[in-house]
Length: 276
Image 1 (cartoon, rainbow, N blue to C red):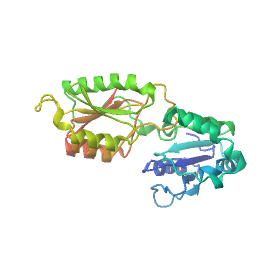
Image 2 (spheres, rainbow, N blue to C red):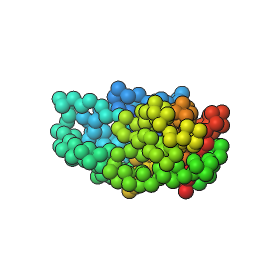
Image 3 (cartoon, helix red, strand yellow):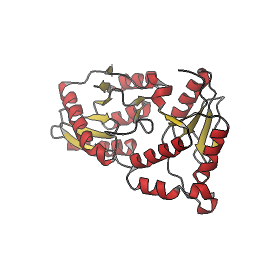
């Protein structure tokens, strides 16, 4: 990857912003890390973030252009802050109707509108996978070995998300013995797995297949923002839910802390499978 293009990192929750920032720095492009005020990201030593407010988005865009930034990468989960109407500058306020209309179409619609706004300032929005391609594993089993029943559950989950994905609902579900036990909605993956753990006794055959967490981008999703992710915490949550393993769409999901995630899966007896 060329280190010529100045890149800003719009940082969300978790360790991903730090990984992206370190990769950019290693490539010879020291990044500017920006985080929503009140939501400081977890960053490694030596990397700091500047805070900004959405109410002042246009001045921020102007600054990036004036300082020669060419690219922006969104990394980590972005939480919706409370907005202060009195803090809006007039030009940012003019964008609010566009964003609110997009938000009514779901997360994907809102993110597409955000991308469009950045591109109107001449800023290229690139995906995390363009900065850190090693975070997106190709097809293969990385830990354990899914059984025939597990593979059938993963296929069923794939079919479910192919239908619900266009509705912009979620990027994951839990399937047990062919039945959808839990589905990811606005509260996220952790809440889904807590629900699955609570209702794991609903399996038709108590001694049968334990179930699979499956994650994939939404069909037609702009993959530059909000790729689903899996990490050590996901493994721990899946294990607590009594699941046999985690499967995901190969090439479409970020695998965070790869070595730690694989080690955690092996220790917990949970398989990891990037499914074609």
